[in-house]
Amino acid sequence: MANIKVGIVGLGRLGKVHAANIAKHTPGAELFAACSFVDEELEFAKNELGVKETFKTYEEMVENSNIDAVVIVSPSGFHPEQIRLAMEKGKHVFSEKPIGLEIGDIKKTIEVIAAHPEKVFMLGFMRRYDESYQYAKKMVDEGKLGELTVVRCYGIDPSSGLESFVKFAGASNSGGLFADMSIHDIDLVRWFTKKEVSRVWAMGKNAAYPELDKVNELETGAAMMQLEDKTMAILVAGRNAAHGYHVETELIGTKGMLRVAAVPEKNLVTVFDEQGVVRPTSQNFPERFSQAFKNEMNEFVACIKEGRQPEVGAIDGLQSTTVAMACQQSVDTNQIVELHVNVKA
Ligand SMILES: NC(=O)c1ccc[n+]([C@@H]2O[C@H](COP(=O)([O-])OP(=O)(O)OC[C@H]3O[C@@H](n4cnc5c(N)ncnc54)[C@H](O)[C@@H]3O)[C@@H](O)[C@H]2O)c1
Image (cartoon, rainbow, N blue to C red; front, side, top):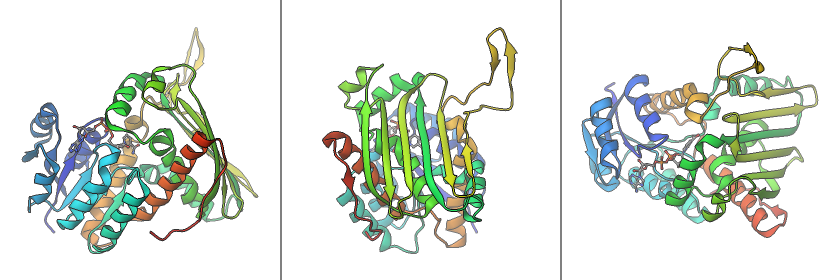
């Protein structure tokens, strides 16, 4: 089978990572086209990654009949319309999380995806493709922890990224802390437990960075959740980890518990010096999930070649965004929010 020709939209913080992975680390795929508003980003794609066609508008790129698949890494609010347009033009679609920021819009998008079952649709919940999370998932599925009772998640961005985040949030609407950050943890909770969230109580606080108030973003948020079978989930998300990129997950079951990345280790080095005993830490998402981003893109292309759908799809996008929105609503209203567990679009 010929190489799958991919067009990417968005070449920002994550777009550049996906573009390089498609060009260099995804056998069976060719990074054929790129679309961005920014000239330097298109030059980078041409000069550094050998992209043949570049576009200033997404509409033009999806009209190109040479392109088999699009990878959407634009700001979150653009995802639903760009997914629909690509599907309607007969392309396979990989979209970054979240699938969208508005439930009605997401449902409309799911209808379009469902009308094109022969096209692959995949959502970028890359943690499912991380080796440690896969190891943990296998243990849970084999019953090694017994019945899960609690899932605890930390997802905290490094303070070093704050300045660029304020720009990102202000310019392009992240959807807020829960839709932007906790959505990965919400997906993990659903993935590990195979259950839906039925009620949430969330709160937030801005302490160190008043500039976040100006762009209507939370510095730290916390949520307690009850799942449909009474399993509990506790989530903490934030933008202000002094030591690096802190993503940690704990699963407590009736027969045991496990933690993924209790310390956000960069590598196996331990430094013994005048500061004491120091473990270097992972500093950002491209570093921590470097292999997972490659694995998910390989899975997307394998699904296209083998004519199958990936395990993470549009319904996961709808459910996780619904829960993230409920968290935000809980913060805004200071109320517990009940959710109607329903996986139909
Ligand atoms: N999976 C993860 O862990 C992860 C990490 C970071 C970002 N993301 C997601 O990736 C997406 C992009 O985030 P980012 O941090 O790379 O953003 P960014 O702001 O750094 O980059 C956005 C890019 O999109 C381009 N763009 C904006 N609007 C466009 C449009 N209408 N048409 C074409 N191009 C357009 C910009 O020129 C830029 O290249 C977001 O949805 C975000 O939620 C996911």
